[in-house]
Length: 180
Image 1: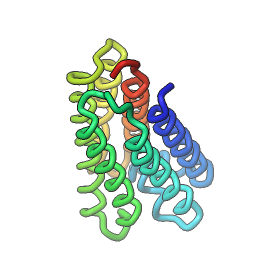
Image 2: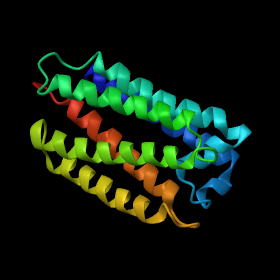
Image 3: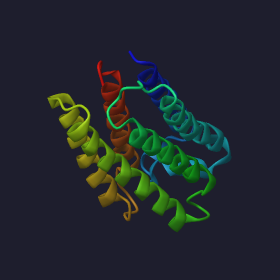
Image 4: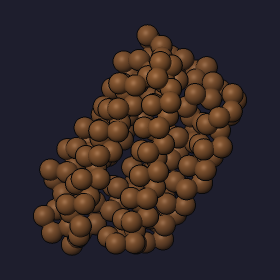
């Protein structure tokens, strides 16, 4: 596994474990329909919530320093990963309970950019049936997240986690590809 893939894997696993901790501390978040951001609004989950986002942001940024020098479209991928890392930090510093419109806009930009980047990655860098399935999972979970976003009850958290998991696995597969 390439070093950039390991960065993404470690960030994704760390982020998911910290979100699991948040869910264990406040299981009401599973039904609150505030998505992952629910956990940023409570003293007992704000730290693991913030660390989850920061772990993933650091993994994106760290992966940019370890991408194979001959990877196709390397500069664009570096810019994209750093942009997404900044958006993740933006989500942490704009709690949805205080500045919901800004937080929602940042989150929407992040998810949209991740989906577009995923489509671009499989079109330009590495296409397999597995990467196509991951993009389809992203699309369907993104549609579900968009549907549940304005509702007071639903599966927003679950849709967001599925989306982020599919995106992370896609990055790991693409960055693990030999002979970029």
